[in-house]
Image (cartoon, rainbow, N blue to C red; front, side, top):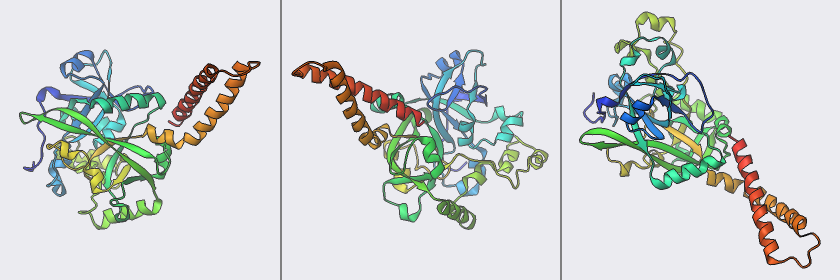
Length: 357
């Protein structure tokens, strides 16, 4: 392991992972733990899964990487019946950590891999914003960072695949909330994570841009590393004795890389956001997974014209309905009609925004 890499997690936080069996509708992805494990690891609503991926130590192009692990945050669900030290993890979270599906599904020795489940927290106002956003409907998606095109540098926005915009419930020029867990180190060990965020506008990444990036990854591997090839390279798992050479050939892994989480194209300022506050963390690079959701404030502003029209129509109708035959209309009648109209408008706005996710 290179000298400038930072890892070192407390051994009591090391866990074995398995797949979640069911799926309930939640605002984001989650891990399942039993009550005793949650109490012992001091887990509350949020946690971080960290994985010391074998490629980070074996790949020469990663020699200057600041951290020797990949980390992604998620929600915690308490499920009775799970064994201590065993956690169930959503597949999207496993993909974000670079865990190949075929190896995970069939390997008997995967339990020995260095996964760590750490407590995570949010700053107070971030917690308030996240909680209030859930009223209007929130969907988190996992992404992996990519460097921005030259034309997009220093513009204050990011790009994602156009078809993914609808999944997030956003349109071009809307704002995204991009979240990343930052390690908090005490006595040389990572004891906890704090979830930081940045707010940036988003535009679609065209097919031309995506095709061009694929060509650059092929022709200029050092400048544009291919995270898919690095993380899902079965050779590094063979070296770690999680897969045999025969098993690799059976899965056709030499020519068919596994699908990764979608990319988000960000310039250096965006990828460096928050690092100054957390000295034990480096700039997000081409392997760093992130959680992304829409900005509710931005979505409400987008709907403001329709919201204003709805309020005006509701105000007129409520006023007529409750003051029919009263002449003249008193100030209290106007206040009452305004309050009822506002409630109707907000309810319709919440219903519309929740339907988008």
